[in-house]
Structures are given as structure tokens and as C-alpha cells.
Length: 368
Figure (cartoon, rainbow, N blue to C red):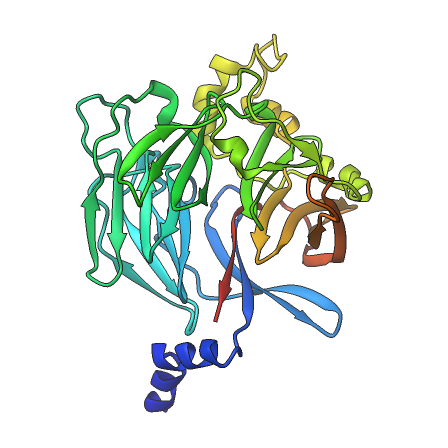
């Protein structure tokens, strides 16, 4: 009945479950289907009786097919900006994970793609992802879900041209950090209302998917190696940049991860490829998409509570399998190495026949 559905989706019910310690964490994954008609599709990861499957849920027909950002707040997933037919959009959509229904929320003041996003104090902060313009006062915005309004953040004092090309973002100590194309980081402090510059990331062209787990910063390299470093490395301004170490115990995954092509780099990245191809060792021109696919091997890393999730794909004859592994992390002593333990690993989707590669756009955890 309508009243029953209203009760199931009510915020009071979820608050009560949280107070009783009866919450559950769910993994949501957004895949982009292969050409010629690429479109984002949403799934929930279901584990039952030792098996794992991606179960389709209602998707958003008007979602940008690339370069969007996502934020999780309470029971919802916000899909922010992105590129539609090559142009940035200011649209923001909310997936209600209690009912798996979508609704449009107020648009941003500025159209953005590849923006840095972070949640601090119940508000969503969005940085960059718009055209570099010294006169622009809209480099950052903040959304308050209680008032359903966007407010402009203070102007960033000094911006650099490549600050608009953001690879990933993370939150630490009420500060939203962005890792940009030129291997630098910048941040916005929500508590102090000011901008700052952070450390330089080692070999940013080779590392991505930075995420904070239990106070440590993790990322994945093109060759499938997973690295970690102390969180305060983000702030130290050393000439050599951030110093990271390899997560131990995961060599068995490396061969599969380096062969994967599951990460979505977006057609917009091709436009910048010719400017950087020599740096990566490509001296003769060929198909840009093929070059990038071979260079930028793709496994997707994300956090899920205190654990880590990795998605990758495997071609098996005429079919394609998308795999997922959940990894718990352990640091036996302070100052020592971090070890990864594979809690489970299995194929979560099989495509037969294999007609084209899917791409993982987003993977997020929602606690209900």
C-alpha cells in the first residue's frame, strides 16, 4: 500500500535503525555501456550464499555519460555535473537508496565536469570542474540539503590553468582535497573557509582512485599495484612529493588488474592526449583511443567502510566477466607496513557474447 511504502522510505525509520545498530551497508555501482550508444546504468552489489552479483536498479536516462561526480549523504547518492554531448552540465540528480527512485535537485550555479566533491558537516562541497577564468568567482559551491540551496564559496586566491582537470578527490579533517592533472593538490577547508595548496603526488599519470580508509590514503597504479601513505603526506610540501609504500599481500591480484580495461577515462580525455603522448613514450601517431586503452590499464579502486573494493574485467573466450574483490586492511604496528587480505573475490557480471567493454564510472557505499 501507499502508506506502507511511505513508512519504509521514511527518514524516521532509518534513524531508528541507526540508533538500534541495525544498519546495513550496500554497494552501488554505475557502469557505462559500450558504444555505439553508451549510457550509465546503476546496479547494487548483492552477496548471497557465497555468490556475488550486480543487480540492476532503475537508472537515470538523462545522466551525463561521462565526467560526472558523486557524493553520498545519508540515504542518497548525488550525481553532480558531467559532460553531455561534450558540454558541461550544472544538473544534479539524487538517487534515493531507500526506494531506488530518482529526482532532480536544484542545479549548481556553474556547469561542471570532473569536479572534486566532498561531504563535510552534512553539506556537499563541489570544487573546480569549470572553465579556468581568473575573473570567475564560482570556483567552488556548497549545497545544503536542508535548505535545498547552493552557495558560492570564497574565491580561490591563485588558480592555475590545469586546476580545472581534476583526477580525484578525498576528504580529510574537514578539508576537501583535489588531485589535478599536473600532479599537484589543492584543498578547501570547510571549517576555516579558506583555500590552500597541498603536497605533490608521486607520478600522478600512473596513479588514481585516491581514497581515505582509517586515516590512511590509498591509490592504485597502472600496473595494478596498490599504494598507501600517511594522511599527513597531503600537507607536507616536500620537493620529492608524497612518499607512498606498496600494500603487501596482494601480488596474486596484480596480473589480473594490469590486464583490465574497466576504468572510464572519457572521450574528453582524448582531446588532451596529443599534448601528453610524447611524455608517455608514444612518438608515432595512431588511434588515440587504442593508445590510451593500452597505456591506462583499468581497475577501479574504492572504499567500503574500513575495507577496500577493487573492480576489474577479464576476457574469457567470447565473453567478458566483471570481477570484484573486497580487501580488508591491517597494520600490525604503528609505522609498519599495511597488509591486504582478500575477504572474497568473484565475478559479479558476465556478458556473453562480449560486444564491447563496460566502464566503471562510480562505486560507492551507502549505509541504510
